[in-house]
Image (spheres, protein in one colour):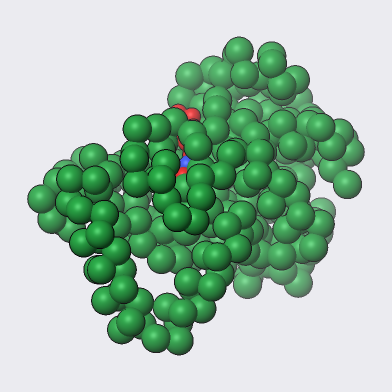
Length: 258
Ligand SMILES: NC(=O)c1ccc[n+]([C@@H]2O[C@H](COP(=O)([O-])OP(=O)(O)OC[C@H]3O[C@@H](n4cnc5c(N)ncnc54)[C@H](O)[C@@H]3O)[C@@H](O)[C@H]2O)c1
């Protein structure tokens, strides 16, 4: 279904972004990947074109899109995947302003910048998909990382805004909300490695995205249990809050994200 489609993926030097790019390539797409540094080795290994793009900089995002379109044609699917996460020393407001601002730029504004650049073309063509790698933390919480949870909630909100505003124009938005996946982001985070709901591999997330696109589904739940937790939160917010606090106590302060 992706044969000859032009696809661009940010933050794709490894982890989920690389696996998503590989999934599209194995289905016949032409893929441009980017990361903070040119991901030359990854691009060569998977058969993509590689570019440098700091997604916190709107001009850099625009340039990446121009380069990807010059090489592969108008973008059919844009995957806004780059992300950052920081722990909260001491309390929920403990992360520095620098880390909050970087989280806002990378986890939220990068998608706004990319959507601003690709949506007009998608509207003119009456087709296109915009994928945001948010997180289960965007529906629930990453305990011990308020800056991550809050900005991932905003990422989910922006994906919803695209879907609701443009679905009738032939444009689809997909929002990927995984729990823990084995990537650089979870390396050494013991709670993630031993989590009761399991630690997925990046290709599992890519496959969940492929299926969601095939079914035209907005929410991509590589861990289906996240959908159950989300329903529980909506049905009984108070028990969600007290239950999550119990989970925090079980994890212990010294096991929270650093
Ligand atoms: N690993 C998990 O458990 C998990 C769970 C839910 C959501 N996610 C999300 O998945 C996405 C991919 O993360 P991952 O787990 O594959 O980890 P990862 O560290 O392998 O990938 C993140 C990539 O983003 C890049 N990046 C960071 N800041 C950037 C910037 N300013 N400009 C461009 N690139 C930048 C990094 O260089 C890195 O290659 C992120 O948005 C993350 O929040 C991860």
